[in-house]
Amino acid sequence: MYDYCENVHVIDHPLIQHKLALIRDINTGSKDFRELLEEVAMLMAYEVTRNLPTEEVEVRTPVGIAKCKVMSGKKLGIIPILRAGLGMVNGILELVPTAKVGHIGLYRDPETLEPVEYYCKLPTDIGERDLIVLDPMLATGGSAAAAIRFLKDRGATSIRLVNLIAAPEGIDRVTRVHPDVEIYVAAVDERLNEHGYIVPGLGDAGDRLFGTK
Image 1 (cartoon, rainbow, N blue to C red):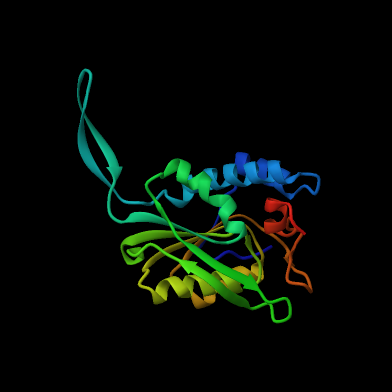
Image 2 (cartoon, helix red, strand yellow):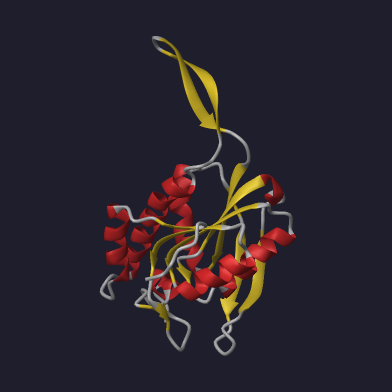
């Protein structure tokens, strides 16, 4: 059993776990995979945004004045790691449609398993936003750690990492190099295999999402 640190949050809501089982299934095709991934991202977003600051305002209703709470503080930024992270974006935008979306393109070198950057397009005000980095899989942790470093180098100070499935090795790497970043996952699996894939995992999330090999 993996010993979670305080910055790692495993979201074990029954709806998320049920949909995760369907996502893992080898018989789930790309269409259903995309829809399920979007749904799980939306459900996870409730927990990820739980501690966002609010302020009290007065709202006039048809019968009087209500004291309500609205979000305050920094605005949100959503940063998917290409390409699989794209599958999680719309689920969060359904809840926070005003969030800005940046993109970081990284791929894992098959020999070294280290991340290689090939694309980056970010909001100009990332230093003024609470950022949510998205990637379905946290395997070796190399891509996530590199993406977070890339954001910090450009002024980001508030970053959360959201993954569907994580390996202990990936969690260890990210928490070691970025101890200030909170990680939200739906499951922590057993280990990585010799090819750097999560076991039992769900295969290659990007290939399953887009129907490629």
